[in-house]
Image (cartoon, rainbow, N blue to C red; front, side, top):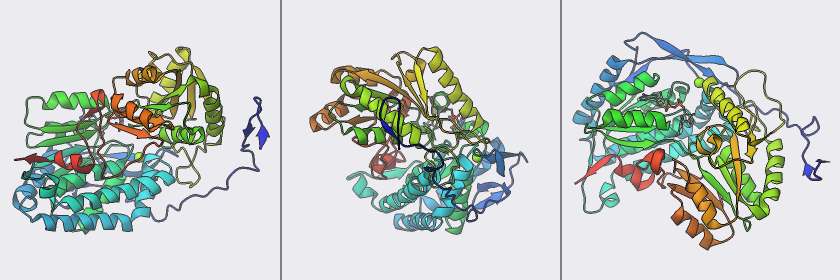
Length: 492
Ligand code: NAI
Ligand code: MG
């Protein structure tokens, strides 16, 4: 320990305090050199004959290449899904459907370590996150929705739940396996069939899921997993025989999808961006609050739609909170995603790193004051130091736009009404956090904040039983819980 300039104790990460490297072994991860499209229960070559690389963002090395599906491939996948829907899946007794979904959940648990390692290799997130959060939560979603499959009359009393048909599902790169589980599990539990597209930078765990689905003997065509970039996603959205689009990703693409399906019978759930406010009142347990703020924005490189990227601190405790935050920032370990001690892994892609750097520059140009941790960054790969901005104007771009990186803006407030107004002053409304000792304050805040989820004295907590989704430009529809089921059925 050493004293810093302002006389606070600070951990020194010199050689005496460095953790020894503790990398998770890669040997458990079997990654094929090339992946085809998973259509009608088989891996088939793309009609485009084209493939693209997926790399490890922590060292920029190629991990594998995956098929680039075009409109003809999408058509094949949709036809397989339609046939499976008409002939098999919608007709199967629900309790039989449930057995398949339980089987997928159990197989995912059995191969949890392999999934976690591949998730961290392909996307750059710390193994601690993929091992302790992404993979178990993904398996839990399959378990949870398997349980509902034959109990829909209890989910929707006095109504009959009828599946929608074929669902096109497009997911992003920040929680690749978990987003696949969020989308596939409720869809097939309610009797729909699926064409799923993972993001182009993180296709590998979805393709592993395809392997499990094949081994689980799920009837061919019930789940089809196809890879490609934006054009492939657009081909799914525009296919005339899709009944429902479920999308998670940027607000820009969400708007394109909304326009594309306007005037059609396609239903949609859109889970888009966020700019969540995390609010610390003077009566909050400050150490826990600081830890919650760190967890909320830095632990997943800020690649979280509900990331607490705007911090509001009550004026009387501002100095204390800022000092604690800076001290904690200095102790965060940035580096190898496979190392069990790593807090902040690799930024998912070069493009995303450039976006984050662009916003850091904008913050400085707008006159905000920047503080970055002094940690060393690995020589190769896409990494970003955790960054704080103070002296931030409410109207500044770094306080208004989604950065999707480890960048936190900090502002102060005096009263509850003032902070509610500031927190709501954003085009988004996905989530928020409140830190206070007073239950009444929590209730007041949760009713007045326009956010789909409000966490109190915690942050980024997820559970399959709990619905998730946003207001305003954060999208519409809910995933998770009963609400997540109702997004895949018509009630008659
Ligand atoms: P994106 O929205 O372009 O990508 C998400 C998914 O949509 C990917 O599978 C992609 O292939 C697909 N896609 C792209 N264009 C499409 C189109 N025209 N039609 C159908 N599907 C399409 O997100 P991107 O470019 O990777 O990230 C840009 C920004 O979006 C990030 O900086 C972040 O702010 C935000 N974002 C938000 C996410 C969230 O969870 N809400 C997740 C990922 C990104
Ligand atoms: Mg990758």
